[in-house]
Amino acid sequence: MMNRRTLLAALAAASGTAALPARAQAGTRIVFGYTAVTDFASVFVAAEEGYFKKRGLDVELKFIPLNSTIPAALQSDSLQIGGPTPSVFLQAVDGGMDLVLVAGGGLTSKTMTGFGLVARAGSGIKAPQDCIGRKIGVPGLGAFLHVTFRAYLKDQGVDYRKVNFVEAAFPQHADLLRGGSVDAVVSADPFMSRITDSGAGYVASYYSTFLPEGKQTIVHAAKREWVQKNPEAARAFREAVQESGAFMQQAKNDARVRASIGKYIKLPPEVLAKVQISPPGPVVSEKQMAYWVELMKEQEMLKTPIDVTKLVAK
Image 1 (cartoon, rainbow, N blue to C red):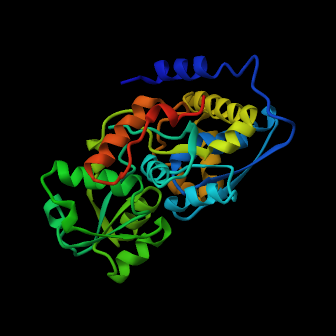
Image 2 (cartoon, rainbow, N blue to C red):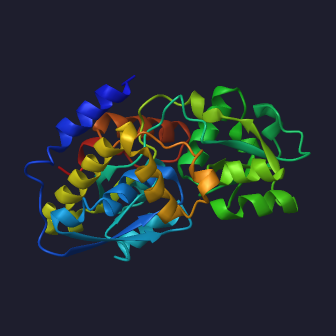
């Protein structure tokens, strides 16, 4: 596992941004789609610290309620770059969309307890086996939390096909639990903390600690056609989030990082102060994507062979 100092050095070396930052054609406009999770922190920081602007990029950050809708928004040109989870991205590619990865967002870490299975108060759900026959909300069918939770259930000897998963956006989780529409949700902070603080539910499992270290939780994708037409903009975007990642790794910048997150996902100060921030992973590797391909094959989610060497924009 990389410690903070090693990761900081790697990010700084990878970016090379201080001396000769890549510059796009003046005023290149990018609408970037994000969801309400801290895995997008490097993009939020890049916007607030001016890393996009100094590279000639005019980046508008657009909130998208459901992660699973981001590929369609890219395809329709409503977004130029968006942050699907790796599984949502791969399903889109599997379905015929010609998308490539420009950069990455957050990474998995066994120290992260910022997401998990949150059960409704009084539901009696305590163990993985208790999920059988229950209705569980996930913020996007086929998205990161859905796929990884099914992998966790399988690892614990539970047939996830016996669990009724329903799609529910993060902001709906608390109300669905209170109303009894679902027995549990696979949720993430700040929504998870709000649910537990209100008494509407409790954390039945911080299953995130089951996941391997250093795998992408969010990837920044674009249409291959857009990247081919705008190679300087794509490179400039990637270098901006690399510089942002290095900034995030310096403890002295923690307050500014949290302020950037709070601006875009509207966190109250008391929640913002406690929320865990995913480690930044601005550069996506073929090896990281191969992990997700194999995981999705195990869950029979892919119908065609996926060539990981064609997924990452150079």
